[in-house]
Amino acid sequence: QVQLVESGGGLVQPGGSLRLSCVASGITFSIYHMAWYRQIPGKQRELVALITSGGATTYADSVKGRFTISRDNAKNTMYLQMNSLKPEDTAVYYCNADRTRNYWGQGTQVTVSS
Image (cartoon, rainbow, N blue to C red; front, side):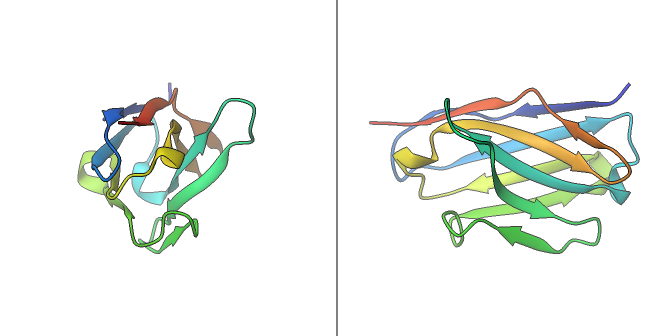
């Protein structure tokens, strides 16, 4: 059974930082392209950052220079370091694994508010 479990979300003030984690099980993690998406109620889910199986990264323009995606294949874990958070970063953040099949986590809420 494939599971992607996100953690690390919460409430943070503008300008603050959070680190999200996604632990994968049931897949050969190292061969999967991994990504973080986010969704605001009533809007489409959008790509935040992606890291390929080879370690190449891509970021949405809105988070470039503030967010960093990384992975630890030995721990089957992907991370998203989020710095200089803004209220518009408030969303549910989802972990995604893609290769031969596509899988989603259950999401973790990030709220940026004073």
